[in-house]
Amino acid sequence: MNLLKKTGLLLGLPVVLLAIWWVATENSTDPYVPPLSDIFATFPETWTVERLTHDIVPSLLRLLTGYALAVVLGVTLGVVVGSFQTVRNTVEPVLEFFRSIPPPVLIPVVILFAGIGDSMKVIVIVFGCIWPVLLNTVEGVRAVDDVLRDTSRCYGIGGASRLRHLTLRAASPQIFAGMRQSLSLAIILMVISEMFAATNGLGFTIVQFQRGFAIPEMWTGIIVLGLVGVTLSLLFGLAERRALAWYFGLRRAQRGE
Amino acid sequence: MRNPPTLPKWGQGLVGLAALVVMLELLPRVGVVSPTYLPPFSTMVQALFEELGQAQFWSALADTVTAWAIGLAIAMVLGITVGVVIGSIPVLRAITASTIEFLRPIPSVALIPLVVLVFGNKIESSLTLIVYASFWQVLIQVLYGVQDVDPVVRETARSYRFGAWTQVRHVIWPTALPYVMTGFRLAATVALVLAITAELVIGIPGLGYEIAQAQSAGNVPSMYALVLVTGVLGVLVNLVARALERRVLAWHPSLRGEVYA
Image: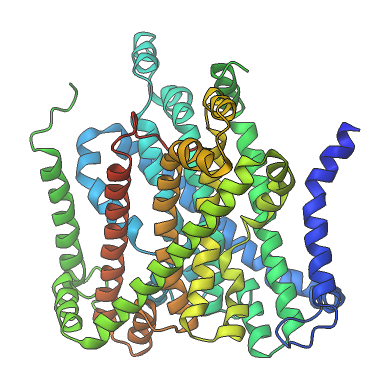
């Protein structure tokens, strides 16, 4: 019964919304809003295996490469900047400025240096996604509990094990918060950079559909992009829950649950 | 007292900024990077002053700021209204939770082809993208805020038979306000990013469009100057949002941190 209720709550509204969409567009003659049944019907013929390997896989590879580089660079620099007060005071305004530049405007700049190939897209993603990770890491490293810091010093914990067990561990909730912001930025930048200049990829394909007035196909593309966003966010949630299990447990304990 | 600073904090910050400027000036001059790709800082500043003297620049800036402000206002009103309604009725909250979790991560740029077809390069296109992207930021914060209402206060209000509006006005709103302001700050940044993205990709008049124009015309110094302007705009948006937050919440016992979500 409880399970039934849960499933109902989980799927109830989405099913109702889809049904409304289906019925409302059933006899639609508006060329831009085709019937949902048409969109579903075009789905299998549009997203074939070939398209999967030709468009979705390259897009995802760019996204993941850029994102991974941004996270590694952001955390590394963040630990350095966060650990030394003078460094932090000196570079903070510069970092704040770079973070405030809306990342998509970097696309024309990066095109100058890297052309319009894969490296341009990866560099754009790195430059756009590094700031939330970097600044959150700085905050996290700075806020390491003083007692823990002193304790680890008394026990003579230093070097790599200090970094691994104290600094990174204590900063990890903040780092994950930054990584979550960066993930949604990474998807946006992947799509935009492909819309701007590319020969394959999700963003490119969807714009091609739009320019060719292949409207149901364009809708399927929008749906695929949405699914990519949702899937990545789910995966991120899983990874986060695993990595931060200790933290969520600690918070539950503090709230007395 | 490790690393006693020799300069005050803002002084060290200035040193950092100055170092950046010197680097931007020297790298192209010495030839580490080609000046065609990265003009020296002085050339960028010169291009910036040329831009500042042109009416076209100011109208582009006004277009961007207008789209940003209208989009942000719509997103705030929608986000707060929907958030308070959903948040204060537990059944609604339970029903909508999965839908919100599903719709939120959909990248707003996925809507670009659709708005191009429906609205073309008009302001409605950027407004749609801005509202879609910033709405979720506000909504999520408001939902957390409404949830945060002290049960004792809620029960007391119920015992005194506060009406629905009085409850919203005097119980829910003050509790949720810090979260609303956090949502405002996050949404203000996102709205600016989307405003400029829409102009850049769709060609809606504004700063983003000017950047695209400068790029296709090969006017590299102007392009950099405009990128710097968007950065300054971003810094200003952030500063204004923070100042507003401090002002609106001056009465609040503790300026709360962000919700970890």
